[in-house]
Image 1 (tube, rainbow, N blue to C red):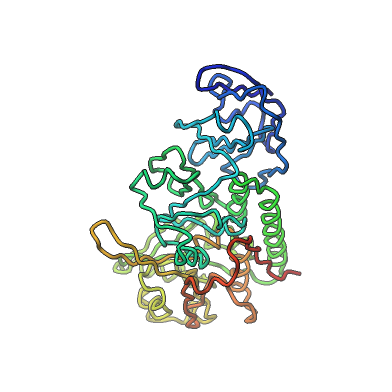
Image 2 (cartoon, rainbow, N blue to C red):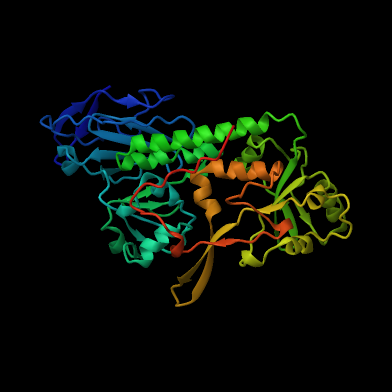
Length: 432
């Protein structure tokens, strides 16, 4: 397979052979980079071998391709191909793409910034050891104590995402919102768009490509996947009764069963079963007697309940809050109450004060569920297993049991006790 590159002056000068195709991809998939549209590097450009590779095994929404001096990431969630050019080649200084389908970056990135307004999982950068190159964030809406400390110490600056000039000084600006306008140095990173926990965790390889850290990304993902699969095998091999789990949330007097695929997958991999798919009614209005009766009847089949109800004050949200919203008089048939198994995933939160455009102050709550739990799903699975098959000797990371009065942990910069320039190691849960 030959890759041709066209310079800005229109000259076509060189072809690149030896393209590595990730598993499951054919040579016909050209990532939107056709011979007529690619920029060309000079034939005098020295060959720069790519020293380490990442192969996408589980993720559904990105693929990686390798040339001798460049890499290409195809992101199907934003519909873009990212051409990543090694900084020690002539191609790096002569090639630039910024179209609706193709963007180019010189790697490894000299620095980067993050749009932290939309549940951005910065923990992926921590696992790769890339916080040293983080220079700007659009808000303190993050659940990482070490990013907060870098910001507090002045090593990371606050930037206004509405001022394009502030963003141009960064080699890349990572975002999680695929719907917004994207200037040339914007790159989307959306692991939460996947449907399964391990698929999301594998996006560490996506970031690793931008930093020539494929070996590290592979190492981290292999450790996480091995631990996750070990825990799941042990949990699903039980011959005991499988608890029924319900994910649900309350808003404006209405309860709703939630069915996000990755959450249901956690239950299955922990050896539980989700509320019956045959339940065709999703929402139940607590002010309608028939809805109330039917809702209570379904809850009588539930052994473990996970309450996702939004609250502006998670520290004050407890079992009594839940019971008040559910309108119960007779609690005798509810196993999740008798078993004291009512959970929320807001155990780790950070209160972020944000100044609005009109000098109004907003208090935002950031849950680590949307950050660390995405990059290290083995910890969520371990929490789920403890919820389904309690031992009493495992300290959960993201889940808290409101039936037992468990409170929250407030994340702050003072909690960062490690050298943030060194890669954070994934947590491996004991598994037999």
